[in-house]
Amino acid sequence: MSKSNYSSIYFSISRVRGNQYCRYLTVCIFVLVYEFMMMRCVLGHGLPTVEAIREAWQTRQKKVHSLNCSWRSAEFMTAKQARSFSGGSELPNEDLMTESYSHFIIDQSRNIRFDNRTKVWSSEKGEYIDHHTELAYLQGSQTLLYRKSNLFPTANIQSETVDEVIKNIRLMPFKMAFFTADSQLGRSVLLNRTDFDVTDLVDIDGRECAVLELPQTPDQVPRSTLYVDVNRDFLPLRWELFGVMDRLVQMVEITEYEKHSAQLWMPKNWKTVWKFDEEGKPTWSFTSFLESYEMNKPIDVSLFKLEIPDGTFVTNHDTEVSFIKKPGNKERLILPGEFDGTNYQELLNTETGKARAGLIKEDNSVAWRTWLVLLNVVFLVGLFIFIFRKRLQGV
Image (cartoon, rainbow, N blue to C red; front, side, top):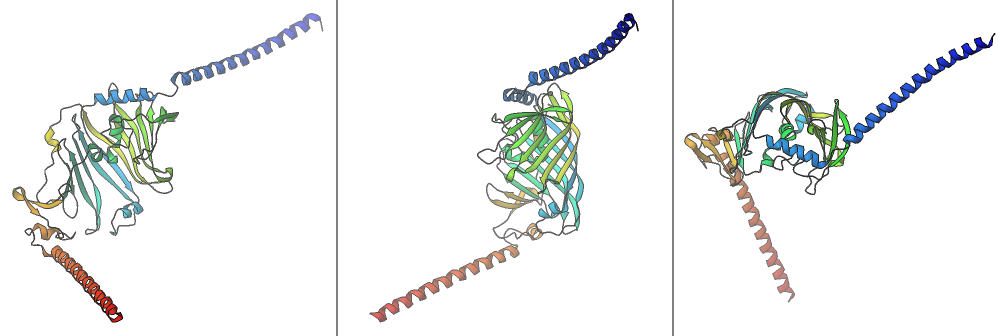
């Protein structure tokens, strides 16, 4: 083989190797550029600061002047969980799956009204029946909680703070979305505090989220974790509350938001787990869907004043007075011991002090205590006389 042939073969091999080296070099450059861009993104974002999160929350909260919304929930409760709430009543050994309807109103003055219609077990009827709860808080007045159930309608009046009124976990998605920075709307979220730590960046359903850890407070508010979307004004996507032994006890996850306006997003779908068992499985949960809402529209203050229907058993916890509301805005006072838990109809149809069932029990109780005191007095007097006589005999 001539020298020229060797040269041409060598050149061909070198060209092939050169093409391979170019390909290898191209791949390496691409990988390096990709890693560099990823590192740049991470270093560019970094962990958001507490100040940046607080500023976004406060800006959003200032834009929410009022909210009027309603939603439906598919409610699930295990049979074991239902029995724990039954108060000894016999319940069917089956899981409960039902629907509930809720309505929430809050205005610029932080007046609040919350309505909920769901199902409760009736031992008398042996089935789940409708149960309606209305709660209202009007600034400068007392809180009114009205319940209409299978036995008789009840109302509780008590001076409460907004925090106590709105602590119902059914309202948690709206506290998360709009009132996270408001110390008046629930201690279980982050309140108006800045002692939480931003610890990590994680992915939740394709959204980059910062992990916010809030430690337990000296007044025993449990620790919680909040996951906020770093690319949507730090909107909360998930909230977790931990209890004894650092066990997860409650969770709210907002799975979808609907954009209302700049920096305002309305929760559209969410899941709430109210109770977990020892193994971490949900025993009471809600899957909720927004039906309608109005934001920043005028709200008539009369909506926050609940009318107590006639026949309602009212308890005023501030004055410790109970009565049944009668027609003509009259009150049938309930005396101590007059109500025994079962004689509502008798109280409804009699005047104050005329229902004897409870009073007889109270009278019998008083008589029994009186006889016991007298017997103790007689025993002590007899013991004194006995000791005194023994001493005289000794002398």
